[in-house]
Length: 338
Image (cartoon, rainbow, N blue to C red; front, side, top):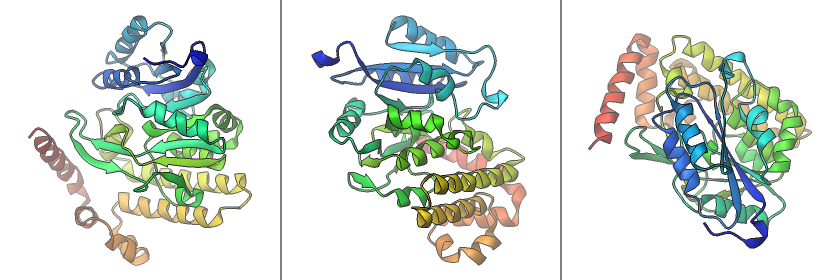
């Protein structure tokens, strides 16, 4: 690995990785971290939330192989089940972090560009007004890694308008996050951390309020869609799915209200659009066709045909959702193996 002499004894970037029961995937994540080519020092901090499938043992094996480079935190009990808000990083990884910048990647995702950290580091070093750097990402089939889509916020590199971020449900993959330490420490002191909302949403919207957001239009990481053990997959077949989706919507709205207060009302238009987007997403995810048709007809018509068809079918015959999902899953798996 190339190193700038002045950085030989300093950690410039701390990589945060949270994992739970991801034995099939964690090696891909760690190997992609180790493959980074940088002219600065970086460390890898991993939190395993009491996995039962051997994930911790795999991670600890890497820690033994790369002492000083990789640090693994393990727990006798599952911390998520204890209701700890804000994820693992604030409580278990941040206290160990030595970097001036922090990067994220969940244990079931991975990076696909060996220069990812270097590119984001260079952007932030050039522009002190930037608090947050992100990039596009691939969407892949969990087992085969077959690319099934690309998550692109824009089609060119450049700065992202904060109001545009506020108006979108999910702007960037967590595996693309790269932030200044100072911005993260401000987050830890804010009321945002205690809000019951998705951690990636809280982080990205808070970081965006702290300075300029630079977007790189290069897919430098991969997100496994509905990976085994992932939150999104477990939600799909949860019998209480509608209630959970409603809670997520309300949490998103509460987050946007808090952001409005944090920014002294400077982004009311973006906040309003974000709340509207959260409500639309709730009715779409719970297949409430009559509400979508009544209140968001134009927006609903812009959805892909397959999504519109699924919503119509499920709204008429809710009991068909699970068999339809399982059939679609088998078809996607068969296509992915070709």
